[in-house]
Image 1 (cartoon, rainbow, N blue to C red):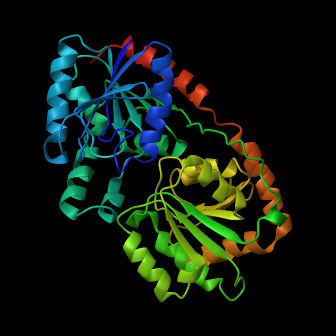
Image 2: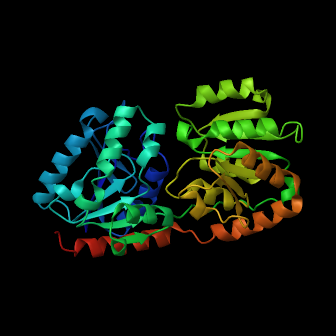
Image 3: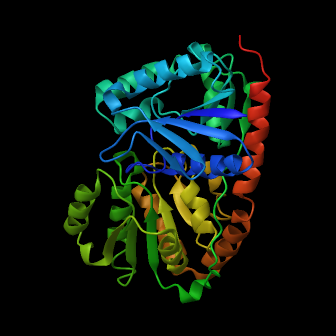
Length: 370
């Protein structure tokens, strides 16, 4: 089988995130099984036009201003010339609208749609464009099958008018660490955030919660893993709140170092407005670290409220303060959630996710284009 992936960023892109990890983990495994995988991605400074990244053959089609048009033209030409058997369109940024021009079946891999949250992330003209194009999905993708990574995304698509019978839920896997989870009593009062530093991630809310907990847990340390456009603002806010000396902005770290930090923390916090699934939730669970997260799409699927962590209404600083405080201050509750988090993480394997994707590709390949 010859697969073409349409995704703006490849795994080497400086802004690659959870969606790119997901694509790479799945399609590296499928490439090892003999499937030919090509990705049309955008370029970035010092990137080559063509490069093999793991099992993916990446073809970079220039910068963002022209990328989507070039990707559409190249996809149309090459699918009609029998270079590919299936197109996998990643729906996590601007839709490519591939079913409108592809000469082969399209499998839509939907991590999440932005909807109105696009206006929290980018300038309003771009957000308006994304919002408008997303409204075309139910009609233009009637010929496509969908693979989504959470029940929340499935329900979102169904509410928008996508046929629920055409949607499959495939939970992502994780790379399970070699570390043995520490008992809660040995972890101290560490709190960690793992993810990109963007406005819709609401990391400022976590800083405010930590400031509110200062008098109760003066020894509590916060480690923020990740980079993004909000970093400078968040560093300034930490200083203004008086917690700069107890807040470490670690930036990007290796997987091994990430696991060490997570394993030493008492709680991981994810205050985002919206996620496709919550990969970082499961990664922290794998080392026995429960989460306090927003009761938001994706996160309400990856966090089992009261069992592997706690869900808090989006934007509720007091709620986050209370739940983080509970895990920092109550060893019995923290231990119970830690054990359940470790057990929950064992359900998620990349090999199983790859097998599900291969089956979905075969179904799409033999489907009929309407």
